[in-house]
Length: 231
Image (cartoon, rainbow, N blue to C red; front, top):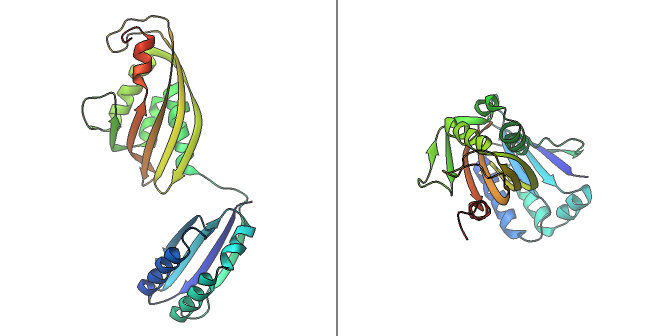
């Protein structure tokens, strides 16, 4: 079971605390079991901070605490605090992967099911889209996503299969498989009725709760070969 430790502390020396955290990260590289850490500052008390550290399990967290560097850094951190830090140990019973879920909504609800109204809900108005099938480096605006989805849906009856998804920081990487039947004009090619397949990877960068930028890498050449354009 995933495990989270919440460390609550007060200090007027946050720069020194950050230096100690960076020092610990460097010293324990390749041996620590912590997978993610975030530090937040209380808006009503500038000396009050909370650090949230993720671990794969409570057992892995205990291994982390037994590292000699952990004990040494902890003593140095306490010296910078106003009083002793408090610790809350939590077994994670629900983990909301909001960005990952939003990315999945695009492939299922928008692309496959055709709910184009959800585009403005998920994408920033100044969204930047990078697509290997286009001549320009990037197209700007959520309207471009609407245009692309409309075009693909007009050309194919298709489905997406999410093979794997990785979320780190503001980025969500989705490895997908696509299967479609050619029902309408596509890049000047009249409908053939052929069944096409391809695989691809999409990276969405999130910010302020919306998708700010996207990168699309997919085997468009496989579709063109299936449609008889390429040999």
